[in-house]
Image 1 (tube, rainbow, N blue to C red):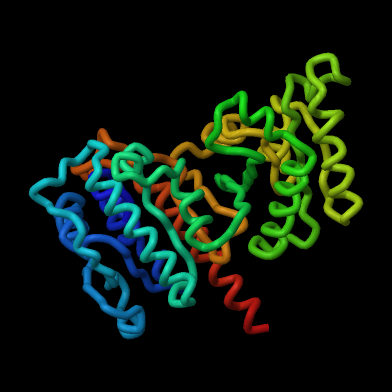
Image 2: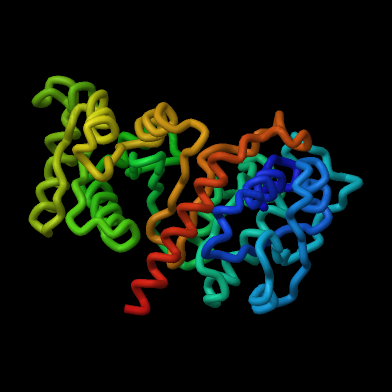
Length: 331
């Protein structure tokens, strides 16, 4: 349910009032029942019935709008201050993630949708992670993960994410670019069921380096990665100028995904076309994980005013991808 002092609990409840999300799924929230009950009052989500459970199996008989709660009971409501990062929020958030991953690794859940957490709260609680993604990777024993953002039909994977721009440039290597292309291709084929996905690779420098005049990374690192990917049978193209490749992918629909070289290069494009509905899909984990592509919205926490559109899309994407994999396994 995310940071208990943020908008996460409210977003969870507001999202689950959307009845179309219940067609093929049941839902369990890992969090604090007291916080969720308070969020239910704040958002007036009275149609949602929260039921504390001790086993996922208990949800088998649940009806629409009945939500199972794995209640960790780790928040003192008297000490909880909405809209502020805190040690309490960081510790609680960490424990929710650990429990959720435990359930997923046991095969008790089909997908994970994470509500926003606060990096500052995590740090105040002593957990030195840049964010959800890195923590999820460690808990699931995975070394390499990649962030793909999805907004409508635009999909953007990132070579690097939560590092400085200076460090991001250093991370533009043939190995890292090729790895991102490969993981994106695998996700498009396996999860999105695109038989021969078209992947556009963005350049790093203005005009994709313009034959080395504006930078060498395209020639020395990105082009060799694209060539290697094509030798492996992946339909990758580029590097393309960063200022046009996203337009071509979204408006002209020339590509099924774009590889961005760093965090803001990809995020700006996605948020321009779908600010309120962008979804983060983590590639490389042993389970499906999505999240709304925004933060805790401290200024709206405890007020019931946070926009749930991105959270709804995150749930919908997770539900659709999980359903697709389940059907695939039955074939």
